Image (cartoon, rainbow, N blue to C red):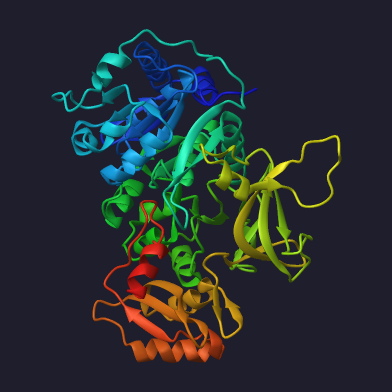
Length: 520
């Protein structure tokens, strides 16, 4: 029985040690080699003072050393904190200070970038450089990765149980500074087994890791692969054609992306070999526009499309069975294995068919809370609705803040984010409904609908788009399509054309920033 994240590697090393586990560039390591490097790195981390529950941040691009450092932290008994490599120094410093990181694993170039910013991180005691040792940049001691990985291996079974803390993933949220979502070993293990089961992953799969590891779906690419002994190809996104090349080179069978990335990949010419090897494509991090999904299915006629919904606080929540995509292309599906999804009306009762309510997730995937933030934890992690026995402590569930609708057969449909909903002329309008029509027009590449304060309407709808064609966009043509398709109260009062839309580090549209720019 798996009780610790490191069990994923030790099991695979024992049964298929010579099989490829990770590839980065020209380098591939087997499961036996990866498991050995993890335990040696764990011994090295313990040697520089990492103790049980200490936080170790990993701030580097996707590479083999990055994965080793994450799993080695777990094997040493610590808690790993993956930091998105595109973050600015002040953002990195906030994360390190917020969860009292003791050791930072990074590259020499990134250490030079953030050394001044992290000087106020009092808990930081050591920096491990994966590529080269540089001159002293602060009072914090530096160590070479090669030095630590040459250490005697740590025991294969570190102390602790599956409820021990394993990772902290920082998520931006809609307001305020990023908050750290705390995950246990149990959360990660159940998530790996759940997702790999409905994706039907096997040791024959080759999975391209295109999303940031600091993103829950990006980390899931590793855990689900290691759960079954699949081969992971690490990709640091540069241009869409680079991902296509890697898919072709390694005969990738599984690819998960967020909608903005899919919108770029669908415009690239895919070699026939890359199309033929793809067994499944999966979407996460937002609703896939129907027009984009249709084009993807044309590119990959033999691939099964998985439309997934999740939140960092529960890792994954729902997926749509590929067999239902034609019948219910707008649905986010049903609960993943080992989870239960409830739809709760504002009055606390469960929603019936056709009714809307907040999506509430219960089960072993529910995270432990937000690091050192009891107020926000209490807001998001709340008792299940309904009566509670007096002798039993109420079970906590994740109240997502997302409004969904349930149909007669139990399939769920995303309506909108509670704090993204637009209130105009007495109506509540989901931005996705407006955006979908814009995408279906074929005239736009990106689309974000926002509610802007309006004295008469409450909020007026502003649609910000980028053109699909190099020649630009005929705004009147798009407006005519919107008027033809949408009821009057949903037609945007204003359409703004931009050359590009800002995105968060995880690749999602940065609605907060876009809203701020529109307001100004």
